[in-house]
Length: 307
Image (cartoon, rainbow, N blue to C red):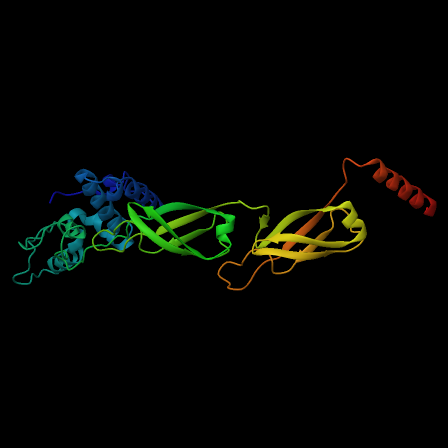
């Protein structure tokens, strides 16, 4: 296999820092990943070279040997051993190196370093015993839209991602914008690597009269002026049915009451709920009859006489 300039593959100079190498690798690996370039053999080949270059240049020891010996960096230790033997005036019989200032590996069963790295994306291990490098598959992302009333109870949802039908259990109390991960439902791995993951973002649409803030719910309940003044009972909606509230006499407009445990379920905490806060809106009567007006006038005079 021809010599590959790893610096050139990553678009860097030999003075590149470790951070430069990391950034270049991430950028190029994303761009040329096989999942983003299906049926493009050149992209696959380039992706292999990018990973090959990163494998060597990101390791300080390997990079040092590569800078000194180039394509034959893998045999750097043997070069050094041969050089030491040469400088000491001795040569072991049958040693695979020739004498001189430059030693080249002569063994017929070994190739250059690119041959070794061809195993990364091929079958089996490389000649140096290195096994093929495995890469995790690409992650997938999807969004699921739910009504607030659906998010109130644990239920199952079925949806399709990349032509796959996936059925999941959605726990009660899931929040708008919340993301969950389903391991192994992303793209297949490379060289037997693990599959990517599936990330699902939930979009919650409010189809109720309640306002949700965390695990608490808020609602406004209109009551008549007469009930606010004299007191009484009022049927109020909650997420799991109606409840009867007692209205105390002389209840003021905007009075707030708390219904403990009648809010939204706490995510993944079975039986735990937030609270429901009810704000009373006192409604003034309309279209009064003459008799009603007269009664109000009499009530006004009675009130003024007390002041």
